[in-house]
Amino acid sequence: MFKLEVYAQTINNKAIGPLGKLDPASFLSKLLPALIALGFVIGAIVFIFYFLFGAVSWITSEGDKMKVEQAKNKITTAIVGLFVLLTLFAILNLVERFFGIGLRKIGIGPFNITLFK
Image 1 (cartoon, helix red, strand yellow):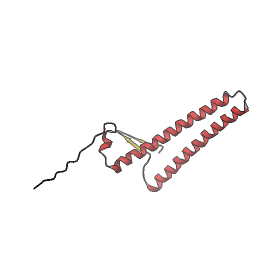
Image 2 (cartoon, helix red, strand yellow):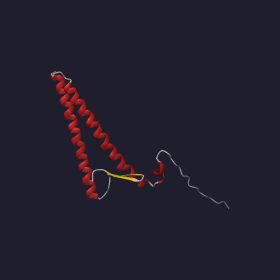
Image 3 (cartoon, helix red, strand yellow):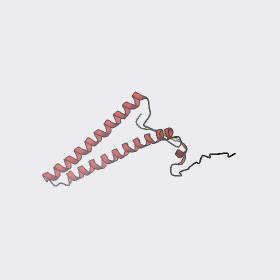
Image 4 (spheres, helix red, strand yellow):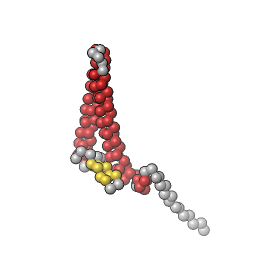
């Protein structure tokens, strides 16, 4: 009779390298820490630039009360953003300790990076 053979085709994406060969759980366990770390880095960079932008705006306001107030609002917004970022970090740390998972550990080839032990 007929013999049905099924061949699994492997799709290799050169952009993600060996990550394409992982099962979904392993892939997600490597992707989540990288995304969380990227989010914290982007948040810190945005804070620095927005804070400096507010400070430079204050310096260049030339005593105009409206410009000084806008600069103060920018600095206040930057500080609130930093507070939110640090709060998220504390919640993440609490979740890691409570559930025993490591969301801040990133493995990149031979390098293992742990954010803020």
